[in-house]
Image 1: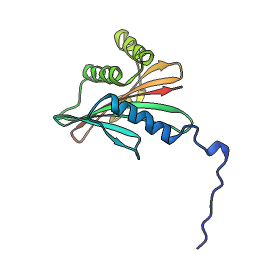
Image 2: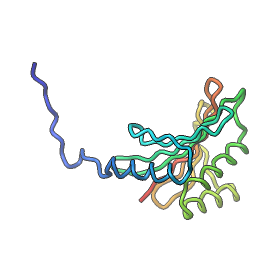
Image 3: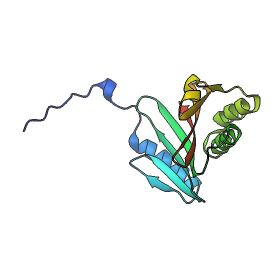
Image 4: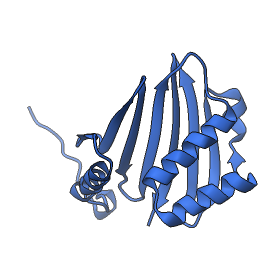
Length: 155
């Protein structure tokens, strides 16, 4: 049996070390006790009770980013106000001061851009301007699980 190998070029190599990313996930996990770290997913998660799990993950190959989310078993989807409350809580817990300020100010003054496709989709996406791209707040409700996630680019 002969296997064909695809040559890896410099443009195919990841810029960020998986071990470095895992160390960042572990740092966040140690800052918030009770975490379970999944090194394959580069994710820390916390069972916060009553059917709710929070998570933090980091990753990227050419663009590095972080995300935090909350999954909750629920009979119905959170309303828009509750989604923003959760996004701000996650930002306060996991973001640095500068990114948190961007989120807080955008929520306070309502300067969040909603995806045009959000109305006709199971997923709702909202965007906040960021110096390196956009902070994205996503919300979805699927089979009794309500998920709010906030993701942001990192230099």
